[in-house]
Each structure stands twice: as structure tokens, then as C-alpha cells.
Image 1: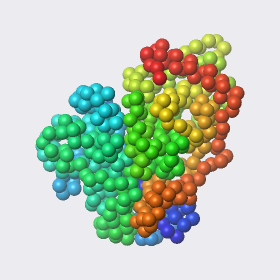
Image 2: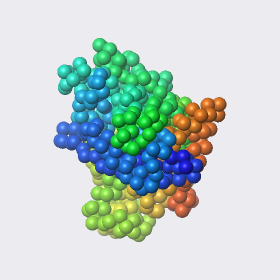
Image 3: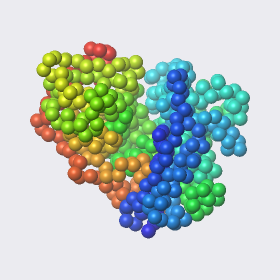
Image 4: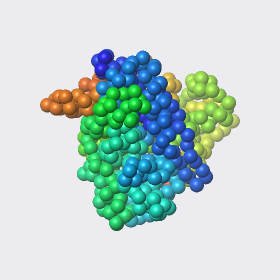
Length: 504
């Protein structure tokens, strides 16, 4: 066996997979939770040490499940939640708890930066995307303003996955894909943007604190003796560059060439695809990130998917099985019932203050089954809105790789296929980001061993070996239902226009 590890440090916890490169099998998995610091101000933070402790715990559980000797592991890579801000001093000590992607306490700082860049159009022109509160940049501004004494000690800015790389190797580096979500990065030129950085800090401290960038197939260094002892690894075990969780999930779903789209039916919804050239969109709702495959990864995120269906489940006191049974009892269109599912506001379209609402109710259509179907249809229409934004940029999609809790519902999968008018299939492995990290770890070693073979070709071969599709889950558009949804979807768009003045 040739054993590798993939690590995914998410918001709720850390997951580890152990894979065998020779058989293309996952040998074992492990996970561990981390707490969250939150309050009414919008503060959402974690301690970096929690990630390390969770990594050690999850790693040990994965090793036990795989029944392998950790000293035999030949390489590893880390996937991490995007956009967080880890501040290190010269000695490598973390200066402050880590503000996360979901932290909104820095909204005023982001508004200031967006104004400095010249608004939405200026940000698109300067960086290739619009800076948002979730990105790293506003967190840095907040840190500088709120903690001037700590700012004077700032030596390195890292993202969450970069910090775990630092803990493993003591190397302070960043990778293009994850860095492109910082709000400090020009996605077209693949570099830190000096003009934006100087707007935040003209002294040069922030510029000097940004780590060097490495390409996706790079081995950044070996595991230190100290980290190796805690994990049971051989000192010097190679560590690949890793990347953001969406970038690693793209690899872990085989989404490494144009035409494939990964769609997550999770608490929120994400859509991302591979592009061979930068996607600097007409719409600020598309985040034109770089990928962790040396390409680009245009991405859209909606806020209400299983969070919305979960609210209806709770209201009706239905478990997942009963909810899915109710979906089968209603016909497309939910008897005319239509929902705007904005229980958490919305990001695409940009309606942070929006509220959920039900429309077209009458004595005949007001049933539990129609309510269940209406929330699923409306959440899917929101994802279709994002898909249409992609299509307006000339991005063609031939297959959707569906992930997340909602993907377990056969009816919901079919609705996605019919609404999007595109085939849908689920990957077998649910931990796509951790698997993507393991694949990237193997890729970095293979490229180093065989530099004359094109790197993209080697990655494609690895994805074909490791990414397995569940053919039992495959759904193709049904001609009658697809036509029905083609008639229904414009009604959702008209309601958006009527209620919020939004149009595609």
C-alpha cells in the first residue's frame, strides 16, 4: 500500500481520511468537533489551538479505523475553511482568536474598504471580485483598529489551512486558491495586490506579513519532529500546499475541468466550476476565485437551502424521512404555492435584510405536502438563479455533482435535474474536501517524481481513480417535469422583482 492522508478543518470540526494510492480506496476516516465563540455583535471566532487539538484527535481516529501504521503515511495535505484571519508574531505565536468566514462584526470595515476601492465596479476592476465582510481583508482592518498594540507585533498573516500547514512544517506560505478569497489578491495576475494592501496599511507592515505564494502541486515542506510525534508520523513526511475547502471539494468531486459543476445542498448552497481563464464577472455575485489546480474556480453561494427546509421540518414536526415522503405527495408547482425562502437573508441575490414569505395560498393548496415541496422548489430556484448567472458569463455545465444533506433525497435530486435542465449525480465519498486534500497530497508527490508528465494529466488520472460516482443516484431531466419547471421558474423571478426589485 501507498498511504496518504487528507485533512479538512471546517467550521464545526476537523475530518481526516486515510487513502491507499494503489487501490484508490479510503481506508479509514476520523473526525473531531471544535467549539465556536459567538455573540450578538456578529462575532464568530475560534482558537487556532482548537484546530490543532481536533486534528490530532481526528487523525488518531482515522488511523485506528484504517488499521495502518501512521509511520507508513507518505504524504498529506490540508483543506481549510476559507477567509479566516490568523495573526502570527515573529516567534509564530497566535496573537488573537481567529475571526472566521461567518464573522460579521467587521461589516463597517468592509464598507470602508469597498469605498476605498471605488465601490463594486472598482473592486471588480482592481481585484476581479467584490470584497465582502466574509473575506479576510476586513478582519485585518478590524484587528489593526481594535488592537494597535498587537498590530505592532504582526509578522505573518495566514488563512486557517495555512496555519495548520505552519503547525505541521513551520513554513509560512500561502496557496493561490485559498489566497484568492482574502480580498487582498488579484485573481487575474495570481498575486497579492499591493494597491489594495497599501490602502489598508501604508506602513508596509501588512505587505511584509503576507506569505509567499506557491502553486497547487507544490510540496511546501516536511512534518517537523514535534508535529510528527503528536501524530505518529515519520519526521519529514511531505506536506502538500493544501487549499480552501471549496477548492479541495472541487478536486474531491472530480471537478477539475470545464463542464462539471459541484453543487452543495447544505445549510447554505454553493455552486462552483472549473475555468481555464479568470472569470471576472459582470455580476459581483460571482466570486471568481482561483482553484487549487492552477486554474480558476468561479463560485456562487446562497444562504437558504437545508436551513430553509429544516425550518419547515421543525414547524411540521417531521423528521427527514417524513419530510421526503411528503415531497412525493405533491405535484410540481406545489399547487401554486410559492415561497421566497430567505430565512437567513440572502447573498445571491444580495438581500441581507430579506425575510422569508409564502405566496398564492388558498384553501385547496394549503397542505403540509405542498409546503414541503414549496420550500424545496424555492431553494432550488435560488440555486438556478446562480446557475443562470454562470450561464450569462458563458460558463457551460454538462453535469452537476451534487453534495450535502439535501442530496440524499431522491425527489430533491430529481427536482435539481429538472429545474437546472442538467444531469445530476452524487459522488460516493461524502467528505469531498478531505478526499480532495488526500488526492492533492498524492499529486504533489507524483509531480515531483515525474516532472516530465503534464501535471494536469496526472491530477486527472488520480481523480479518475479516487472519485467514484453513485450511479444509483443519477438523475436526468424528465422532459415533462423539466418543461413544467421552465414555466414555473419565471414566476419565482417575477416575485423577486415584485418584492425586492431584483432581476437577473
